[in-house]
Length: 100
Image (cartoon, rainbow, N blue to C red; front, side, top):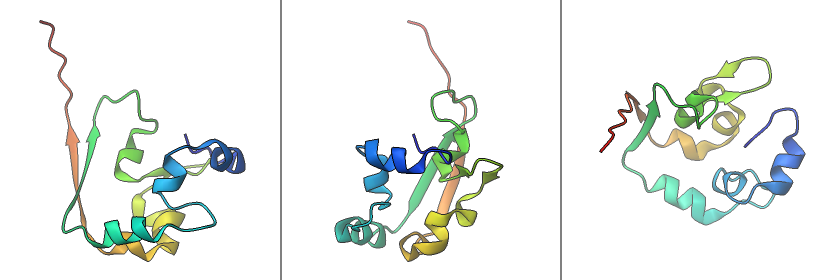
């Protein structure tokens, strides 16, 4: 999990998120190409989610240590022109658990 208080530790130990977000010093052109090829981006957040914290990170929101930033306020959005190529569709879904 990305931690604003331990960012370097996060980068050193992240096996997926830092890579897919292209946060490493050496950027991956394929990740950029994949984002640029998108025609639509649908971001789903579950209203009662307890696994993704904060749940707004499902919409690329980020807790900066003081407040929750929306996607367009994050460093990832501000410095990375990749994410400007598509307008996301935001969905908040209710998760229903069904016992069989």
